[in-house]
Image (tube, rainbow, N blue to C red; front, side, top):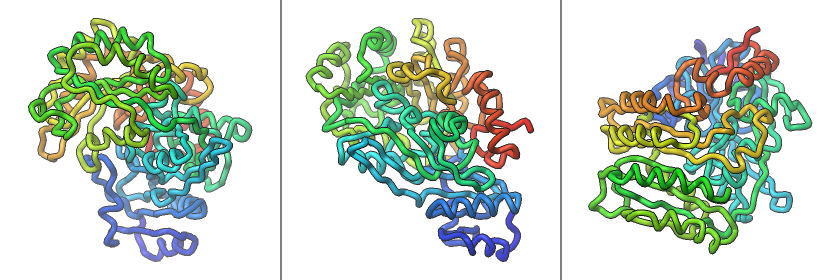
Length: 462
């Protein structure tokens, strides 16, 4: 705990951003994160404006033995971007980005959100795989791996990271890449915020223009078994340009859905074809669109930035989120027959499950090339309890029961960005034994005191 204003004054001498303490009028807003279940009260929030501020904040925290949380977009379900009693190093004001359309690269700071990043890159007809919600921060998503609509065509976000500028636990500044500090570059591509604070990311960009063929098909839950079996068989033959994700939930009161189905259990097939030939995309999607009798078919050519924001309304800031997740192989009949009876057992109208189609370009990167683990999985499923009232209905029990039911059909692994506060065994499951040991060795080298420990933590052994 920071006991005296005079102590903070020492930091103020070298810090150019805002220092927000509990008596500051912006304190309550500054300590909020996306997950409304998280209500923590840091002693100090240091809003950085650049690398110099980050280095000053790190050194100050070390000198005063402060617990440190690092905030980029603040979108992590575990709420690790804020702490009780310690210091938040807040990067949210660091939003610089420079796109080089000739080299097809972007240099971006960690306070950017994906919607802000996409707006800049799309003006040149370029994009980097990055999330399915525009208000997700680029930093956390990249450091954990990075699922998104373009992943099967162009790989994970971390697969498109070319280099990064970092401040380490001792306040030193490094640029890491495959050529410089290659061990650390390996670790930050999937290893999260365990090894330092990234102050700039350099990404490879890809042509995604002028539109993608994207949208949703919405089927009644009564036909879920048929829909999921067809989906399972259909995706085995589709090209890497296509991603199809499956959401199971109660139909929201959205203007794009007929009023008579609001609140009904539905299966939503969310589609994105990112190829350059729309006619080929129409051909590829024809069997999926012809199957059954969906309530609505909203698949059409649409700007990539518009499709990126399609699901924003389902995950607003301030609701209460409780997640659990599995990696899964191809869906067996038994897995589908287990999934369906559990999928609509929620009590809150905002809860849902989401099944991600993996494969494609994700599998074309060697498993050992980065810390990210799970490239052989065919799906990731996230079971998301979401509610607004602190008194309930609380869907955490539904999530746990659903999670347990799918355990026999999982690979045993989990995507690290979908982890809540689930303990060290689950962190180890996210990497597997061999990678976890390699990450521990990296932690011993770059952060032996576990200064950066508010994350899905790799515990040092020195």
